Length: 97
Image (cartoon, rainbow, N blue to C red; front, side):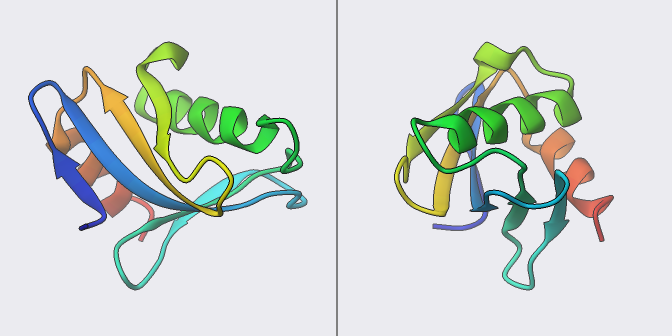
């Protein structure tokens, strides 16, 4: 799977999550995947929730428009972004470097 895949009205985004970081942020990895550093711990879904909220905030989406569809208990996750164009997600990722 590529880092981004577009469907009908949604985008699937592969991310790698680093929980318990000193501050939240995002950067682009060499393989095109997004790496999220999160302050939330990886317990009881806290890191998953934080990842969804961070991406939603950055793309100006509703929190409910972003959810984990694969990798709930893994650092490598697939997020589904509803109601956003692939071009908008690519522009956000291009701004990261």
